[in-house]
Amino acid sequence: DQSLCSPLPVLGRDVTVPLVTGGEVTYAALDYAASAPALQRVWDDVAAYAPYYGSVHRGAGYLSQLSTDLFENARRTVEEFLDCREDDQLVFTRSTTDSLNLLAAALPADCQVFVFETEHHASLLPWRDARVTYLNAPRTPGEAVSTLERALADRDPYGPALVCVTGASNVTGELWPVKELAAAAHAHGARIVLDAAQLAPHHPLSVRELDVDWVAFSGHKLYAPFGSGVLAGRADWLQEAEPYLAGGGASKAVARRTDGGVDVEWHTTAARHEAGSPNVIGAYSIASACKALTEAGFDSLVAREQQLIGLVRDGFAEVPEVKVLSLFGDDAPRVGVLSFVVEGWNSSHFAAALSAEYGIGVRDGLFCAHPLVRTLLGSDPQEQGECGAPEGAPGEKSLNAIRVSFGAGTPDEHVERFVRAVR
Ligand code: PMP
Image (cartoon, rainbow, N blue to C red; front, side, top):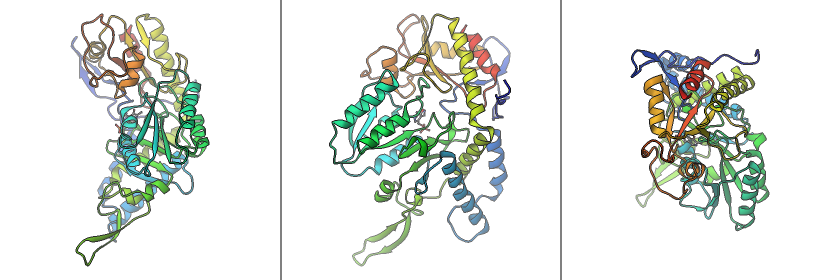
């Protein structure tokens, strides 16, 4: 198909790993949902900039000026990538987890928070100090909207409220009805933050069109290195809140008071929440990845990824023991993330065998979404257990699942090898 692009060049393409059966094989990284390999283009951009890097917003030195320009240009590039509104603010953070914790720290007093129990722990847990309502797992996108509407209709209508929702599940890969959920939130005077950790790398994303108030994602899932993330959206709550971290960069002016204390005037720009020396390489690499994805074109990236999903589905269709996990039904639209169990197999042993015998890296466990995976496996969502806790002997009921995930850098051969191995 002419509309499909080739896999984008990524780091680690030629890494070989030993097999227990003897010999070695190039590593098939099929755990993009955890961290995607960095694009070669991002690495090249960073290497070209590295000799020039200096601290951001730190004076007249040439390299500091250059780095400040790159940092602020990176902010604009990512704002464009997300199609932000005029007066939105984009804060560079460490990760999606960091972004959502920042927003949680900036909630107005008495804010009510609504979150589905199906969320990744990064979106499920930061709100524990607020008044949180956990919503039951919906079994259709329509039920997600009606569940939220019912919960919001019952809320205290005068106080502030926030809905937190994922764009694409890190477990099932399924797309959530974000636009409809945003409309429901707004109809009830609530705001909404989109956890786009799994959506942004796989799907075009417009803050304006989805009409979400904030969006959060991580660089390391979007083909950039670790250590940087983004929170973008409405400025008011962020600027009314205390700085996330107190320190240089966030403060505009500091003076001793006559009573011995200090007075601080904090910035009212994104810098308010970027105290300390900003991660300019991180911001620059996210911007570089955004440009590379935009240039490759999401239409062809999505088409290619859907073709890879088709390969997996066709392969699975020949193995009746494989059960794909899904909330919204087998045919629900999804990004390149699929979790499954294999009847008669311990999921952790299965994943270990894929690695040791085929050089394939997938994830096994509960994927930091324990209540969701337990619901999908038909066990008790209230049970406690560790991420990746081992199961009993093969043949026992699955307590864990296996996740395969891929993206813009995945060659067909990796997915074909995976399908062969599962068969
Ligand atoms: N949300 C979702 C949907 C995720 O998949 C992840 C990472 N697995 C996160 C949030 C957290 O991202 P990070 O670990 O980069 O903070």
